[in-house]
Image (tube, rainbow over all chains, first blue to last red; front, side, top):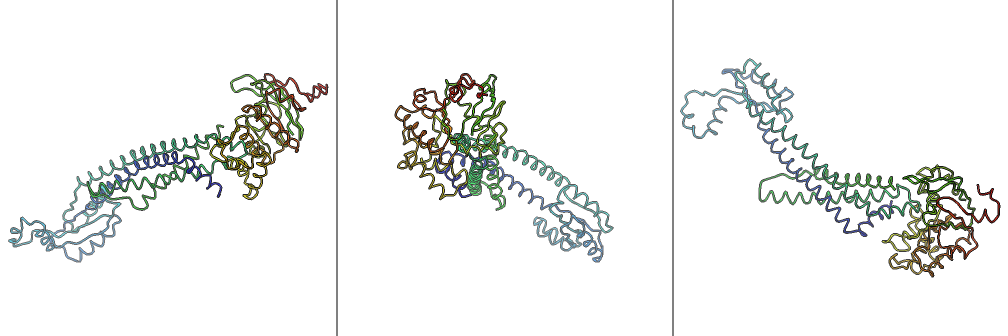
Length: 285
Length: 231
């Protein structure tokens, strides 16, 4: 094992330029993937914030007794899709209207009778914030005898759905394309490193080295290059994020797990790239 | 030790590189393999160290049935052989000592064993003082000595040499040849492919001559005047 380690590290000392070149190439390929990942992360977050506002309001018939409402709220909270249900009394509704609709303050103050109905405001769980679930829950709400009317932004929820679908499709297609390009570039880089040492490989075989013995330092080396490339790529992404944050918009960076995933992806491609190109090389000679 | 029986080798693009070649080289023997370039000398050696596969016939090398050898056993076979080439085939970015040690490292030998044995063979080929030199700092003759040291370090039963003096001047040729003779004198069989007939005449060793892939002369057989033994 120590020998494998030594052989793998020797390459960095003996061919520093080529090693640096392959690490840089890997870093830039992964950087492109990382940039796209940043866009995806921020888009996802923005959509999640918007979806947060998905809300259903059930207006109650005037004069519904509080006991009925309390029981109703309990029933609604028991729906699997529902995160919370809040009872808003007529008075609270009026107070809120006074606070929010400043221009109508005078009108609202002069009212003799409160025209606003009491309501139950329902928030859905994150997984249920799409048109199908919203429609479903709204329908069930109309079934309650004390519910007068159910409101939610039907058009708005449907548009949000569409937006999410588009984002997911684009993310999948573009992300896959970027990943494939990165894999090809990294694979080629590693293959070059293997070809550069084909003479050495031939000599190793002549003196009786097993294929496994020849392969191991290459695998380790590929993994190290991929890992270094991944670390540099995360560094570049962070720099890009800092710039965007300072000059353009408030953005979010990868979570620790996502950053580790990029480094892991690089390591994995480095490893697999070495495995396939050394394997192909060994089979051919 | 090395036994070829009715060996045929076809070129990948058609034609025969070897036609019905049979011979037996005994333990501790020194044999020249002669013939013009393209006669099949290198092919014979490549079949011995399983670089190429036999088309038909049987090749046996120190207990291995090379014609049917599995890829897993090829490294084991090669560790029993020492191989030397015209172009030395040293690793340019390693010192003489590291080049020799390399052949032992691949076998998984222990560090202490390695350094002791490396110094011993380098001394044997007369290069102990240049152990730290890189190939580019050595003359052709010296590089070939490093290659021979590398071939010897695994204590092979046979040393295969493919035109080992082809790139050397006369003085270096004599030195390297003498070294091969010394190695043979200490018990290792040597098979040396060469087209240098002066060298062949200098020594009383067995000569196997190939012409266009066929064995046309074998001193061990023809001088004994027993043609039946050739098959």
